[in-house]
Length: 65
Image (cartoon, rainbow, N blue to C red; front, side, top):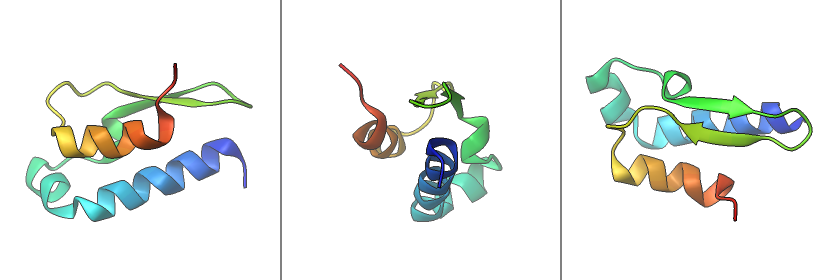
């Protein structure tokens, strides 16, 4: 599994965990983030009003110093 495939899989799991929000907002998690890089990827939240809990779940996996 590539880093990008892993990121997409992880983000899909986050969306599933917060299913109620994404159904109510009628948006996909992939529209809320930007994936950058190839070998070493980073995921950046681009939707400012994404709830803290969802942003936190993403940052737990992709937070960088």
